[in-house]
Image (cartoon, rainbow, N blue to C red; front, side):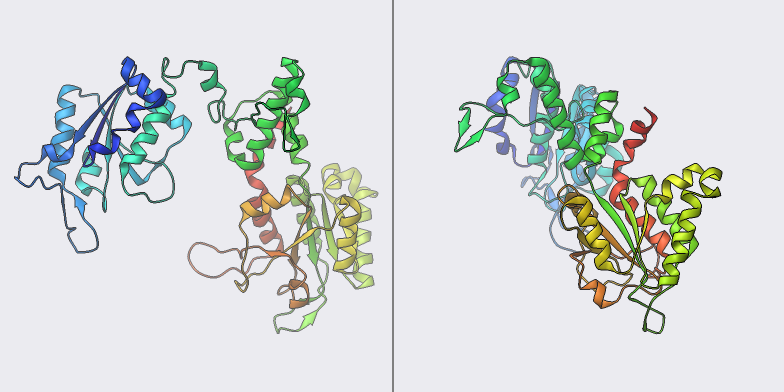
Length: 435
């Protein structure tokens, strides 16, 4: 594998390319790295490689002529050389991308500096842009080293034990299981007994389960593209069932459009749609908070029709969804019921169409779900009153559209969007259900 680096700081690579496995691979000729000083491709006596940007602005831009001459020089020797620009705007470097680039055999890495390179070079002479992450470093040199290491580890002969590469994080699509070494006990912390058992089959099974759990909790999006065994999927399903999410539909106290505190009426559509939503995404319960006796009786009659009456016979799938519905006089009763089921008090996530409060991310909600039961508190009519809001532990971001601040959604629509943003990342479970 050949790596050519275009840089204005060739000395940057003096040490990194001489140490550890990378240095040994270069010494053995398994990989080749050639560094080109961009200043060698200038034609003025001062070897100027940058200039001020047209239109004004801060910083400097790498000039097109030296870059063009350097690329042309390399391409003349090997027309198949693949030109990469290390750029914050590039495609995020992943293991899959590294495996794709390995097939190119000869990569030319442009290390940007200052405000970047002239756009005419980027558009016409760069074949791919790559970023190592959503942050800013001084230049592309450190990014090129990261890319070289990621690809080099995949080349036979660079890492002595191929098993180390094949079982490491991301190669198999999963995060790597935790590692332990001597001593057996350190400051009272012990090595898991299974790793001391000598039973290699059980150790392998234990490590695979931990890899699945770590990936599910920290990088769930990786699982969507994997082809795992039926046993793996059952492990994932068991883990997902540990997440305890509830929906509370609050009918009192809520505001009407005049800003008055009211108790809103139960609607048939809300009950059906929220129950179906909950069943689809594995929500543990849909609790309706309604203080009015006649309204709760109405809801219970409707529920009885679908669970025990003709509705159950007519539509068994709807019956399964409606089982999630429960009716309570007030928020406190609903919270106590969740606490009774789960053995601990749930966290309440408030919802509001207007951005009055600091909100948490959906990623944070998923983290909370691994730790405690969580309730999404939805308001009917014109939203939750301050009395309810003050009881909430966290708040979800209001739902915004694309073009303007209009966000007057039905509670059913809002609930669907919120639930999908939180749990939709686990949608690979469809493979579990098919098994």
